[in-house]
Amino acid sequence: MRQVDFGIARIAHVMWEAELEELAGQQRKTVHLTSHMDCELGQWLHGEGLRELYHLSPLRQLVEVHERFHRSALHLLSIAASATPEQLDQGMRQVRTLSRDIVYIITEAELDYLEHKPLEDFSTHPFKTLIHRLFNIHLHDSGDAINRRVLEVSQARLMHLRWSRQLLKAFQHWGKDAALQSAESCFLGIWIREVGSRNRQHESLIRELEEQHQLFHQRAEETIRLLRRKNFRKSEEAYQAVVQLGREVLYLLTRIEMALLQSGEVAKPVNFLGH
Image (cartoon, rainbow, N blue to C red; front, side):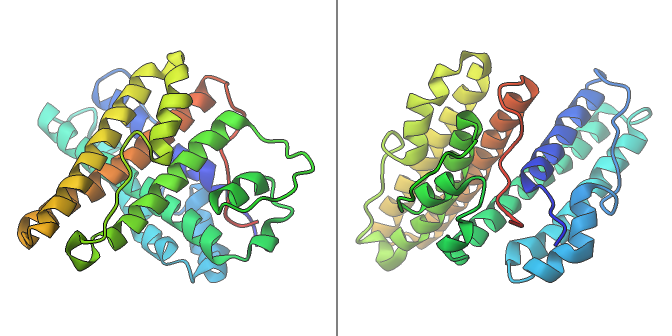
């Protein structure tokens, strides 16, 4: 199977969003943007990709979301010169939402791929150390050539999604047996405190991530409290806020990864699929 680098694909669409923001703000005159069929991710999706990985439901969902992203972005690009500020703002809201959807769906596909493939199949994977760390399995390492910083961001992104999925189990039986980790003690909270906070160059992004992550935990705790009171309607509203905040956390981690790439601190993002 021809491989597509999902790390690059995920970051490329966030980068297009950032460039369109500059276009809408009249800080840029144009954006080099291809159609959904012509970008590397689109060529793979509409070629051999889905045939080989059709069992990953997020990838099937990605086909539609990816097409909508490109159509919305190209429409915004076509009206940028003559549109009113309100039209530009409306167009950017669509692009922002779809950009976050792409990040979330690709992260889901990555985690599904890792969780359902036998661990021994990763023995020659360039990121085998991270993969086995995700699943708490020690594997003797003969010396992976990996970049610590980008691996730490990718691990934080995957672990956050995994924790978010497990959170659903805590909501069963009206939250009776739920025991949630605090924002400070979960994997991402530790990463923010011990790793992210030391990165002064991207301090504003780290601060925004920390704020959203704190809110994510607050709303998760609120959901449990409401469930225990058997207030189903309000607990559902709180949980939907948890879902949206979780998606924002994944998006911000990708923004941090993109910033590391643009600053030259890392050479390339992590690619898990297709090995």
